[in-house]
Length: 402
Image 1 (cartoon, helix red, strand yellow):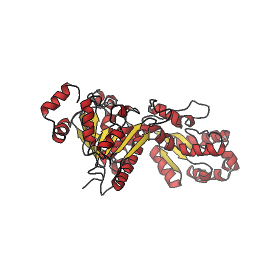
Image 2 (tube, rainbow, N blue to C red):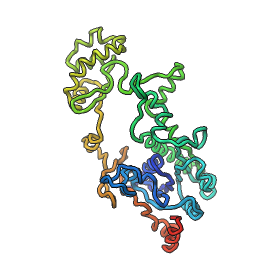
Image 3 (tube, rainbow, N blue to C red):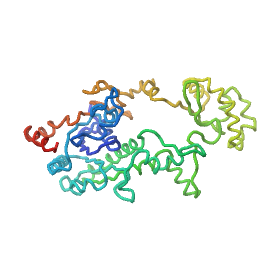
Image 4 (cartoon, rainbow, N blue to C red):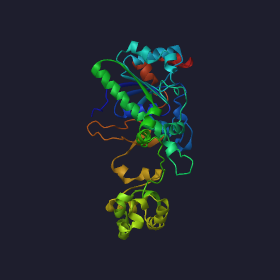
């Protein structure tokens, strides 16, 4: 079965998270992705968690996830020989994707203007924290920094409490997927119009523009002239928010519109017509909410997540469980949809990878091979593709080029 992006050649000059997330998506759908790593490897190889808790360049869980279906060569881009090799590889590439600090590739003679002289139809994408222009372009960014400057932290807290950060690296992963869409847009534009494209992708732009209703809040600010506060765990009305249950937590989306259904779900239909609870004024009253929760909490705490979700589903109440990582790994819904894909890695052994995030049965994304070993494809690329002899490759290794 032919994969969706079979035949698309990607020269991957990215590292860490956002860029590799972009090229992973392309690789999983069949693109031929050649990952160029510095001789000591992508720094992501040194980020845990590590397989069996043993720090090793071939055992980073994050690296294993972000680099499935790719080939790896080592190359020192700061060397003249390394720069010549990149230009040769770019000659027949469809996409070049880099994730260095703005201006770095130009200083190395490997920017878009240089490479398009070699390959006029090349699509060249830069993925950086803040983009290639603007007053923040030279700032460094981590997920925590981007959560703050992108807007979520300021509105993600209980009233009167410090802002809360979101855990993990979701801003980087999300930006990587945005970058993949942009890369494919550029690729098809180039294919149809016969011209090259330069794409400037900013993690900050992707995050601030689309994560957690930021656009809605920005529009509301423009219309109303003041920032809207928002609670991390409570909306307006009740029952609404995150509540403890017998084996964890659940998220309930109730409020005034659904209060009759909530009351019936609890076995207390009389509450639905009691003005003490069912009016808009009552639903917006914080003291009334706290009073209601003295009734609701004893009821819900006796239910497991699964029990409550089934009751809520039958009652027409929107709700969901707060899954732990263990829950995610063992969830039957994910298992039935084949969300996890087993693959064997030479160092880590059998690894359950997150499988395709979308289903395309006629040309599916698959985890065909695990992440490459550092420089695993040096001989294949340098000797088989570029025509170097093994002696020349050995000499380049001694000189620190590969």
